[in-house]
Length: 103
Image (tube, one colour):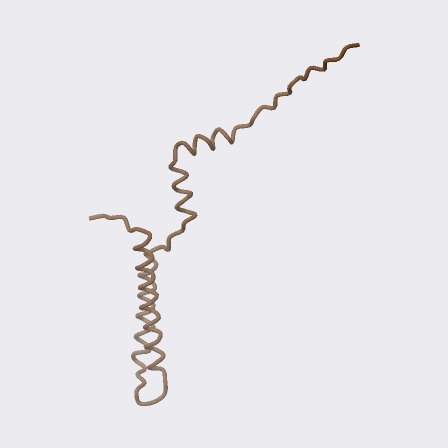
C-alpha cells in the first residue's frame, strides 16, 4: 500500500534519527573512558550503528516551504495564466494631447 508521507511525519522521523544518533554518541563516549567499565567493542559497534542510521535517515527529506510554495504556484492555473500574461511585452502607446490654444 502506497501512502504519501506528510511534512510533519518527515520532521518526526528525522528528529527521531537524530535523537538515536545522539544517544549512540553518548553511549560510545561512556565506553571510551579509561577504566574497568570501558568496552572498546561498544565504541566500534556505535560507529557502525551511527553510519547505518545516517544512511537510513537520508531516505527522508526535511520539508522545504519555499519548494512547496513554488510547486503549488506551478499547479495553480489562474496564477500561471497571470504570469504568462505579465511576461508578454506591453506595447507602448503614445497619447496625443490636445494643445488647445487660440492664436
